[in-house]
Structures are given as structure tokens and as C-alpha cells.
Length: 236
Ligand code: SF4
Ligand code: SF4
Image 1 (cartoon, rainbow, N blue to C red):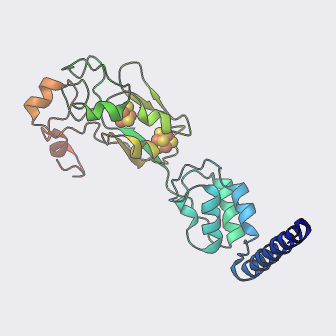
Image 2 (cartoon, protein in one colour; image 1 turned 180 degrees about the vertical axis):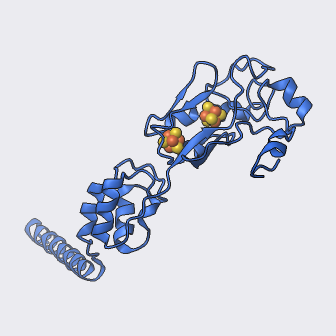
Image 3 (cartoon, rainbow, N blue to C red; image 1 turned 120 degrees about the vertical axis):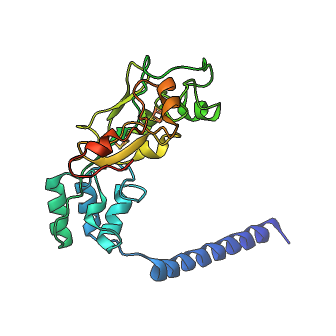
């Protein structure tokens, strides 16, 4: 077989493969194509674009698809403002549902000078690393470690490292997305309704005497709050 015949066969074979692949793609596009709901684009524009995941989906675009397809409800987004929320409701033809606003709070008051230190921690400056190595440098094993892993994940700059060894949440900026809550290896952060006026800012489960030795502001479960609450709303 001459060189010219070899080239002709190769061209024919490659051409055949190309034709076959093209036909398969055409069939696939006919049978597996998904028609995108035209409302999705408008919904994406109205959603905050924070991609924080508080709605339970990978990002705002994913949530918009679910909203249009009826897989989620408007109240799932905690970040959307009231104006956009009502515009989304009218696109979807549903009643407006503004989600209750939540804010993150820190359940520890053991700042420097309040919580006693029992060691000098010289490891990686990360809460996750410190939590793995004997739980950090403080006597209280329940307290905030202060390295700010939570700060790193907040897309709203609503939480910062304070200058006394604890983190500080700005309730005006916090949208209650819960990212910091998920990130904290000590479970120090909690989401509470923004209308709440009271929460227990200590997570210690130690006996009162041990708490008093470790921290000047720890909860010692003395039950004074429970006994004096006029509406019987507190249980220790
Ligand atoms: S709240 Fe948690 S993640 Fe944030 S600094 Fe304290 S221990 Fe670290
Ligand atoms: S402080 Fe926490 S809950 Fe608030 S916006 Fe930042 S990551 Fe979300």
C-alpha cells in the first residue's frame, strides 16, 4: 500500500469518527437538554451574591434555580434585603416571606485578665490547631481560643479579633449566615434572633468551684437568674 492510500484511509477513519461523535452529541442535546427557567437570571440579580450558603445551597445561583423550580422557599435566604425579597416574591408569584434576622453571639467572656492561663501555647496560630493540642492555653477548656478561624470565613466582615484575646461580632453587619458557627472547633458561637436581649455568654459545664478558679466571669450555675426571672423563662 502506497503512502497516498494510507493517508486517504486515515482521513476517512477520522472523518467517520468525527461524524459519529457529532451525531451522538446531537442526539444527547435533543434528549438530555435542560431548559433553563427564564426567571432564574432575574432571581440571581436580586439575590445578594454573597454565596454564603446560609440558604443550604452552594451559592446564590444554585438557590435561584431551586427557588424557580419550587425546591426551596424565599425565607431560606437570611441575607436578602426587604426590597429584593418583595421583588423576588412577585417574580415567583408567592407571598413575601422575610426571614427572621439572626445574629451570631460569642458564648465566652474569658478575655485576657479574666480567664486564667495555664500554659504557653506556641503552636500554629489557628483555633483548630490549638483545640487539637490540649485545647489551647487557658485553664477553662470550654473557652474561645481567640485565633480567629471564625473571622477568616465571614464574608461580611462582621466578626473581628478583639485586642483582649476574644473575637467580637458586629451585630449591625452580621447577617446570621452561620459560617462562623460551623467553623469554630469549640462551638463558641451561636445564632440567636436579633430581637433577643438575653443569652448565656458562657459554655462551661464545669462545677462552680472550678469555673471560679478558671474565670472571673464564668457561669457557675448558681441559679440566681432562674430564681429571679419574673416570667419563669430560665432553666439551669
Ligand atoms: S469563636 Fe471559635 S473560631 Fe472564633 S476565635 Fe473563638 S475559638 Fe476560634
Ligand atoms: S459573624 Fe458569623 S453569622 Fe455573622 S455574617 Fe459573619 S460568618 Fe455569618
